[in-house]
Length: 406
Image (tube, rainbow, N blue to C red):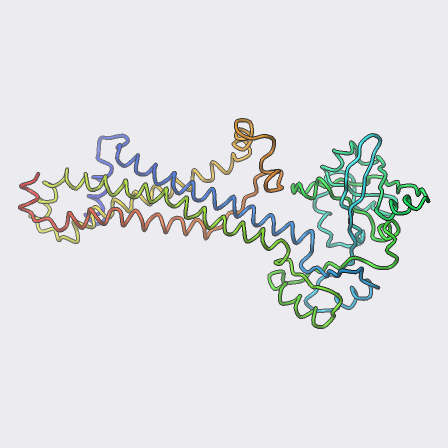
């Protein structure tokens, strides 16, 4: 071990002291700054990734949308499915309806789907019942909607579509569609869980008087990251409406999350900067206290660069240990995030703030190695610079001046 590093360790952690105050406070300050930075970045990554996932599951990788319903969508779906870049192509229809069960009612957002579609995302979120039982007389409900209607698997609900309401206005008094709940899905995304109702596309067409038309098609492609390029190519080859890639769905929301993450990164990094300034001032004090040692080192032939390396190494060591402490605190806090969130809701919130603001039933996380590397790099650079300034001041002192001022 170089003598400069050995001396830096002895000065930072003097023998005989269990926990030196200077080193402990400095490391804790850096660790808290790193922890705050990484907690914010990981949670914001989670919100962004979950929103992207829900967008792709709800709208597909590419959504074909038209102002008027698309005629003969099955034929277009077969043509698009033959493209090498497309995994599946499925027509869909959607619209609001009034759902009722006994004395309870709610507005449902109904989507007509192909029950035979193996790529249907809803299959992954069934927690009660079976989606395989879905037919013209059954319906799949979101967990929140089922709770509002007080129904379980096997119960029945009445569904009133706008087309049925129009017939009632004309004096025909149609009966609502009576559907049995065959499955309940829970995605963790409140926008879906509180409103979603899935029925076969054929049944949807009957209730909405669509004939053989559909509101659009959902495409799933082999390379979702290239959805924008694929959408442009397919739209030019098969113009049947607008081909909207998943990146364009709710673009403003995704951009807002990305911008918020960037701004929070710089705001949280200020905490680390404050800790670094504290380290710099403490090392200045250490240089003044150790003037005699600096003079002795210079008298023994230590080069100014070696003297500077001793104090620079202390700043780097504080940054390194603080970064490791920050990593540990990050995993600890994020591991208990649900307990912390419940405590915050109980003390300051009114209900589930995450569900109300971000539409998730729990705090989502997404660990990104780049964030950890970036946080560590920024922290080590700032703490090294914080130690470099007093180190250069110490290195410029002459042995006689250092001995005289000691």
